[in-house]
Amino acid sequence: MTQAGDASHAASRSLDQAFGAGAVASTATAPGRVTLVGEHVDYVGGHVACMAVDLALTVAVRPSRDGWWRAAGLGQRVERPAPMMAGDIGDRLFAAAVALRGRGRALPPLELAVAGDLPASAGLASSAAVILAAAVAILRLAGRRLPAEELVAIALAAERDIVGVPCGDLDQRAIVHARPEEVLALDSARGARRSVPWPWPAVALVVAASGESHDVGGRGYRRRRQAAESACAALGVPTCQEIGDRWRELEPGLRPRGRHIATETLRADAAVRALEGGDVAALGRLMDESHESLRRDCEVSTARLDAMVVAARGVPGCRGARLVGAGFGGSVVALVEQGAAEACAAALAAVSGRDAATWLVRPAAGLEVIAADAVGGDEGGS
Ligand code: GLA
Image 1 (spheres, rainbow, N blue to C red):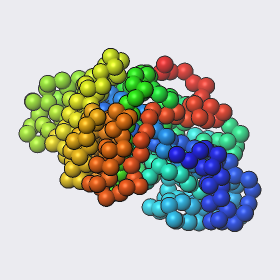
Image 2 (cartoon, rainbow, N blue to C red; image 1 turned 60 degrees about the horizontal axis):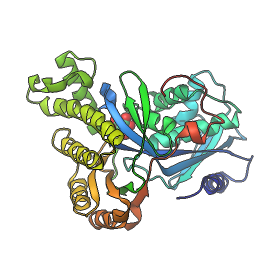
Image 3 (cartoon, protein in one colour; image 1 turned 120 degrees about the vertical axis):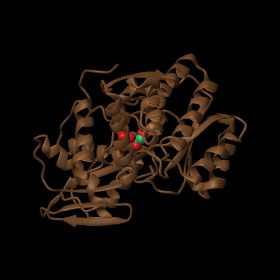
Image 4 (spheres, rainbow, N blue to C red; image 1 turned 60 degrees about the vertical axis):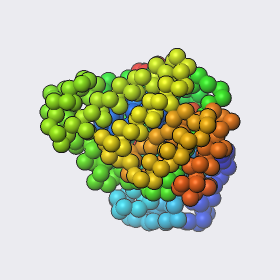
């Protein structure tokens, strides 16, 4: 992994390369997230077990000298008279500034650039990471500090109201609140959270990108969210936590979606118990079951993701594997004994054809820890 200092340097350098030398930039780095169990339930008040990982994006920001807004990254370079959304690299970088402004914070026109090793469109929350890194870099530029909960709210407003993606709150909360060597247990209905220590020094996670890029802004994600909301409404329950066995009462078209959200939130609870009890076999089984539910009931897997999951599970020392993130492409995460990590990564890459896109990760620190100068000071959670 790139060290934070190198990443800051790289982001500042890409700002200079894209737009010429200018004022010294402020920088901030935000990690990606991996969900252990609890996918497609955060937007209906479900439970999620997740973590930040040490793949990250760094944003550099400086004031613009001529009033134009500029953004660079992913091989793109854009300039606009105002921070408008245009379906390119500017969107998420500018959205952070627009959301901060929307909360009454005056900001001058800005130039921003992003660099880092967290892959885009890979199901690892790069979108939330870029928005959050930009928000923290802007806060640092302005010499300001925000409570963690307010930063989460700003990042959510940026993604939902400005970029226009109807996401839940999992990615933003994981990236802000995660702690090293701990798993975050999130309750999306009550906004509660707690941390559970990662109990196994010799067990880690292998993440492998499929090479099929996913798009949370696409129709599939929106439809899954609508179906989940319809299932809760038809049963008259406020969140998927109250469904239990009642998904059986749904009309046949909604039943699989209802079963996914009802069982996935319970699996997330069971995953937390497996971590607390140090039961690696149970956590692996729950990850396998989560994938099956995402494949069969939520219908967000792909043939390649399924094949990658099967390949990983075939490696001795792999305890479980599933797709991670919203699906429709993206990545697979496998729970592995450390000694089996290389074989598991090779098995995954043999299916995806992407040797360079596998990573051994452990639970990493979120912004409350790595950007404590700019983020923190609120109550809530433990
Ligand atoms: C994306 C969204 C999250 C969540 C996951 C699926 O990452 O941003 O809010 O819904 O998909 O669990």
